[in-house]
Length: 367
Image 1 (cartoon, rainbow, N blue to C red):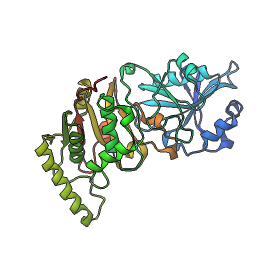
Image 2: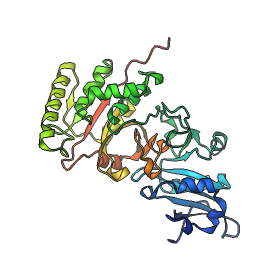
Image 3: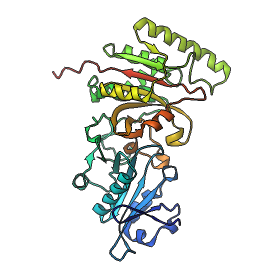
Image 4: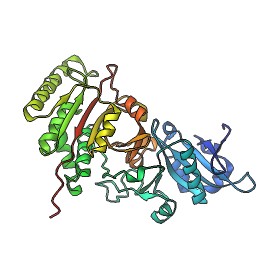
């Protein structure tokens, strides 16, 4: 096993052993079997799993430990479980995150409870829409977050996990609309997801102009601007030429529709500073990214930019990769540094950027 390196709060940080037999004896004595089963139920190696451990007074035996992971190129740590003297383990994780200059620490609610989390400075995350605490839903039934500098002011939107591999654009638009107060949460369901996707799709993906047009048609009171610094069709390079041709016709039709209903298409490359400015105006930005950085495969994907903290932008990702231990706790209120998000949203070898900026609609009448 690689040598542990010192971290703050008299703790040590060691890589998570991929084989159970390689776990340190001190950790084995702290971890219950059901927790250990969860830790090894998936291959977490893509999310740099580590154990933050707190040695006892003798400097040898561990009195507390936590398994932590995080998506690559992001600005948070996630506690999967804390064992032993839980407050000491959590404090050590928070100290390590501060030392790394991260924006937040999250805590999955497998073994944590709300009272314990609150006592350690964590706030509860909203349970995902459509889940309702179902025991067979992926991920933990609860989660908690602790911001490490300025993030407490970030308004929390609802979280909704896309139910197909291709409805990310529609879901991010619906999250934005709900967060802005223009859609009641009870109306955000799979029917709404698929309806908006059907109006926006380029079969099966949603390209920026078509998505912007569908958003404006669904909610005419919203101010919608599409940013796309590439002429011609996009998101088609992976298809054979015969498949590209008819989708290109649909994309040209979407551009014509944008002109007819008054959706401007800005051909400038949208900088991250402009995304921050939009968030400061309480606007929402649907941003097209590649999942190569966060998930390891170069697939285009829509996320919602809705918050900003020092050093990072806060996004909602409607998809989580359960096979790597990634859950809605990772994907919700996810801080990504401006530089990392800039790289993620530079699409294909052409380096273009696609985004849909949505101004706040009129809020719902409380009556």
